[in-house]
Length: 446
Image (cartoon, rainbow, N blue to C red):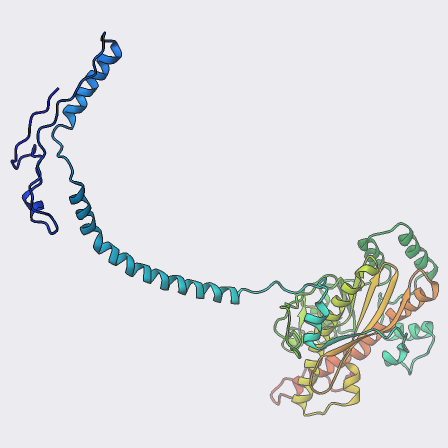
C-alpha cells in the first residue's frame, strides 16, 4: 500500500510546518516538508491464513486513520515546550518562595502549638509526686514515728483522760449516731480474719465504713424546718471537689515541675452540717465558703484506704493533697474574717487551723495532722504523723475508737464553731448587714 505525497499547501492534509511556525524565534527558516511516504511493505506468506488476513485488514484500517496527521518536528516541539512553560517556571519559583515562607510559618505555629500543648498532669502514683507537686506548694510530710499526746492535739486537756468518760461528755453535748462503742474484741477478730483471707481494699473499706467511720441519718426535709439548728457531722464518700469559687488551690511557693489539677476525691471525708446555721442563713453560706450538696461546709477529717503497705506512699500523697486544700481554704476564711473585723491573729486562732487525716493500709492505720507552716502569711504546711496502730492488736483497736470519737468532738466543738464564728464575723463587718438571723448570745468560739 502506498501513501500519496502531500503538497506544500495550507489545507488539512499539509505535512509542512506552517508559516507562523517559520516566523517563530530560533527557527532556522528552512521549510521542512516531508516527502512521500515510502511504500508500506506487506508481510508475505506462502499461504494466506485467517490470522494473516485479519492483520492485513487491521493494518489498512490503521493506515487510513492516521493518513491525515502531520509529522512532528522534535526541535520545534522542544522550543514550543520551553516557550509555554517559561512563565510557569517563574510562577513556580515564586510559589516555592511563598511555600517556603508558609512552611516556616507552619513550623513556627506547630512549635507554638507544641509549647502550648499541656503535659500530662501529675498522678499520686508518680515516683516524683512529692518533689514535683507537694514541694512546689510548700507541702512537707513529716514522719516522726513517735506517738503524740492526742489530748493536747485535740485541745481537750480539760476533759477526762479516760476515753469512756470523755465519750459520756460527748454524748451529752451532741446526740449523734457516729459515737463509737463497739465490741473491741469483735473488731480485732474481723481485722485478723480479713488479714488471713487476704481481703482486698474494698472489703477493708466496707467494714471500716460500716463499723468505724459511721454516718448520721439523712433527713432532707430538716433544713426547711424551723428550730432544726444543730451540730452534725456529714460523711461524704469519694466526692469530687475541684478548685472553684470559695475553694482555691493553695499557691505555689516553689517552681512547679509538673502540672497538677487538684482534682481529688477522697475515699471518705467528714464535713460539718449546714444545719449549724439558722435556716434563713443557709442559702447564703456559699458566699463565704464552699458548700457541697447544699448541706455541708468546712471538712475536718479525711480517710484513705489501701490494701497493703506497698500503697502507703500513694495514700500519703492523697491525704496530703486533700488535707492541704481543706486547710488552705480554712486559713483563707479565718484571714478574711480577721481582716474584715480588724482583729489580729491570736494563739487561739492559730490553734484552730488544722486538718486530720487517717491512712488505712489493711489493718494498719496512721493518724496525720496538717498545720500551716507560718502565720499570718501562707507559706505551705506540714503534715505530721501523730499516732499509728494496728487493729489486729487489741490496744491499737481501742485507741482507734477513742481517736475517732475525739476527732468528731474536735470537728464540731472547736473546728465547726470557729468556722461559724468566722462567717458571722464577716457578716457583722458589713454595717448594712441584716443581723436578725445572727444571735449575739451564741456560745461559739471566736
